[in-house]
Length: 87
Image (tube, rainbow, N blue to C red; front, side, top):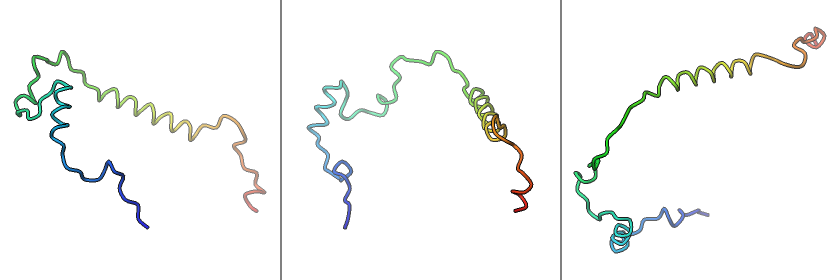
């Protein structure tokens, strides 16, 4: 018994006509140059913000929350009777 790949994963020949039509509808090009692919077209980054301090603080808070959840018992008995320990 075998389970073949779904049809969308099977190799199929390219359909240049369909690809040209999709490029026309989307306002794109069928064979762009490398320069046109990486051209920012006048857009620029207004500002940059470092995100690593936010992730460090978030990870430390999650670590403290994890430690608190593991160590702090809010209800129930925290002692084990000796007769249950000795058998």
